[in-house]
Amino acid sequence: MKNSIVFFLLISGLNFSQQKVVKIQDLQPKSENFVFPVVTYAGNSAVASKINTFLQVNELEYIPNSGGNPFKLASTATNSYSNYVFFYDWEKLETPKNILSIGIHGEASGAYPEEFADWKNFDLRTGNFINAVDLFQAGSIKTINSLIQNKVRKRVNNFIVKLKSEKNPSEEVQDQIALYEDCFTEHTLYGIRYFFGKDKLTFVAGRCSNHAMRALDDLGSHELEFTYKELEKYLSIYGKNLISGSEKIGQTGPGNKLFKGKIDGKYPITVLFNEINEDDSFSATYWYDKNKKPINWRGEFVHDHFSITEDDYHSEELKEWIPKALIEADLKGKKIIGTWQDYQTKKYLTLELEEL
Image (tube, rainbow, N blue to C red):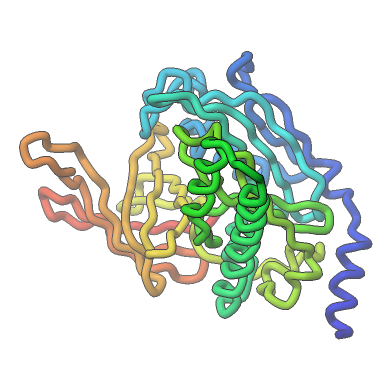
């Protein structure tokens, strides 16, 4: 009980001075369709650089300082998923001092246009993206998932009860009832959106409708609020230190982190690992620091071991990707040590990376 009181006194008495030196401006060239955040952090340019690299590689598929317009792929739908992506505005949220939460609003257009809202959360002590699973004890993940799912179900079920209470329901109301009775509610910490507030954490679960049925969906996305006090007993040491304002950091996994190192001991590269999924799969982007051209990896991370494929091209004849290289490596603390093997020549090159 005493530790809990101390924890929440720390939260309630947070000094926001760290937040005051973090500023966000618009990435240039700003336009009507591209209002994108770029961070400056007085006294800690390395943290700002990590945050900006993550945002630009992750959202724009652009490597900072690689020349040209950073919005080119998004504006021409020549990105990896062939969608036009526009960014209309961003918002810096009020959070505990160790955390930077940025809300981003925009529109993606493939077969049809679709507005989106997303949030990116960063640890200002390191510049690392904050993974939701890292906030909680490993043994509490299932409990947190259940809490999220139960809140979604309750919200949906309460609305169904309201709809069914109508006398002589219209065809539209009947369609709504069918929509919500078939709603997917099995959301988990893997892939869910979330953002920090001054005294609460909000998870944002996807809506019940697909695009074609969106006009029927009055509920929209599910914003699920949990106070830090409610979550305190489930938090990991990392999560407690992050939220309470402690400078103690602790070890977290490699997902959504930047690493620097060399191939063959002489070719400097930078790697951005994406989220490690619940099935242990992941994707990553790396580039040689000299030419800054993105190269994609896909693989698995199991028991601190990476098995990665670097694809060369897609064979129309074989209907499959032809690999360029196979990578096997181990995570050792903040380092990744392994080999990069040329798929054709079978020649092995060393791979050594270290967390930025």
